[in-house]
Image (cartoon, rainbow, N blue to C red; front, side):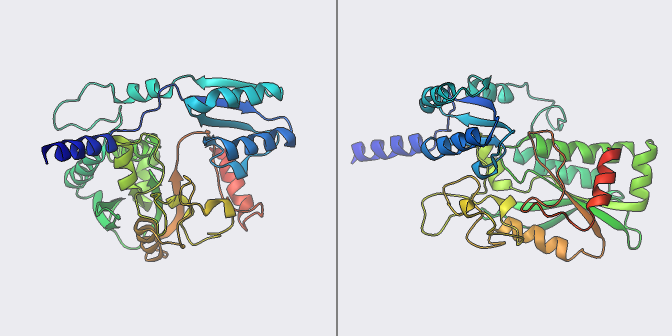
Amino acid sequence: MRFILHVALITTTLAMAPVRFDRDKILRVELQDEKQANIIKDLAKTHELDFWHPDASHHVAANMTVDFRVREKDSQPVQSALDQNDMHYEILIPDLQREIEKQFDVKEDTVGSHSYAKYNNWDKIMAWTEKMARKHPKMVSRIKIGSTVEDNPIYVLKIGKNEGKRKAIFMDCGIHAREWVSPAFCQWFVYQATKSYGKDRIMTKLLDQMNFYVLPVFNVDGYIWSWTQDRMWRKNRSKNPNSNCTGTDLNRNFNISWNAFPSTDNPCKSIYRGPAPESEKETKAVADFIRSHLNSIQAYLTFHSYSQMLLFPYGFTSKLPPNHKDLTQHQATL
């Protein structure tokens, strides 16, 4: 009996050991034509490639720069295939685990303080949302818009004054768990808004005329998992019916062209769209909140990491939206 207990404990410990990425590489490939684009797509079918830019193989096209992670066991055959086809590539990161460890290798700040210079885990962010509402009661209010599948709260911070009917902008960060710089930006934005109001002319004018709804961490469960178990985790943590694979890509779970890409129907892929539109508690909570504030919300901004791009509608088709000209003009002023 004692032996069985020991085996059970060892098995549990091994199962919960964080995923490591020792000697996993990040490659950047400059695609010259359609043939080379198809080679990358074929490699993705036979090897486990984690696409960083673009975020899925079906977006790979000619004359594009493609960045992806390749596991140590696959790096040699993948690089050999690129060499054999005279494809130009470079190794951006030779050992991903080493870079990941640098993100955790930081000195602890003063007890009770919140850092805007390093990444914060979910417990610290949750405490920070309460602190900001308490510290700036006339400027910040915390709204619980729902709960995650693991029963973590989903908080939105309303930044601005409670004066009559005001236009608003909705902002979300951290819809993809591993993109830590995204929640870090939302925290920094709230801090700067409260700090510079009354001092900075532009910020003061904005907050005198409108409100901001800021969702610091959209994908709370996934964010926690990326801190504790798998730094490269992207999806949420919902259980998928008829599959042993966990999670849905919340970014692809909204009720807009939900089934536009057949390649997003695999629950084991990081771009899985979910079993149905708005099937996920997180997506439904955000969609319901926006629907209930349609009279005030004028724009929805979502912040991601990587690629250094400004994207505006649409992402699922090449057809231009009715206000494309206005969007292009605003882009030119940024």
